[in-house]
Image (cartoon, rainbow, N blue to C red; front, top):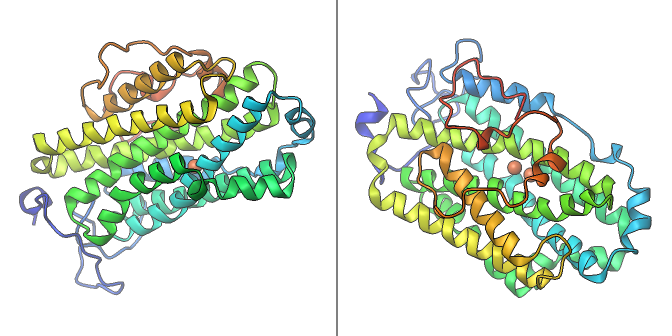
Length: 350
Ligand SMILES: [Fe+2]
Ligand SMILES: [Fe+2]
């Protein structure tokens, strides 16, 4: 049966048996019945085969980055810079830690093994990111400070409240794995990967623009490049759902997603305001607000959704992209016009 004809918002996704000889040789869609057999040649979604290989080829080791100079420089930063640095890490540690778990759980419901391969590869790279933050903290601050940063996710009242809220779509899906909840989980991942992380990176890239904490920035650039692959993955999954199950994209769902994105923007702005008080050099609150709204607009574009903040058309901090780019001279995919992914799409520039 064609998934387009049978799947509705309330369709409950199920996992196929691990030994499933009666299953389809190739999956009929992103979700549905599967044999789990990973046969990349001739697979249903060549973009996923390509993305998996691209992610794999970006393997890197955080401990290769020397942080001796960052250790010496950290104590010379202004107190607001030190605290913003640490508290931003506190948030990113939590995000990467839950992203180690989520993709692997979600992959159990994916019918296309090549897409599941992307998800478990993502989970592996999130482990590298979490290791990077550990490398930073163990190299730069003492054990007492490191312990404090590792507990911010639950000890800082603003952070704890937003963390509890941001995981809700994931928990809702795990409790009731409907197609609607799956789609909303994918959208939440776009916000997590493409708004929260990007906003957090702005702290480290702003320091690096002043030649401060440049070892940290080197780690952040590598993490950022990986997050671009993860963004591409969730954008593609949503595009596949839109093609295969267009009926689930109701006006109500799109309204719910817009509200989720607006809440994400508000929470991120409140968080930056709470940790910097608007006193971080280079990141005044007005500029940060515009940047986060611009990021949200940017993430809506490849999903075919209208901008949430139509008055915000320009990136107020274009230098961040230059500071954050591992591949100078190549534009960020998500700043370009909507691209219809082709089978031979080259992700290497992302
Ligand atoms: Fe990550
Ligand atoms: Fe990620």
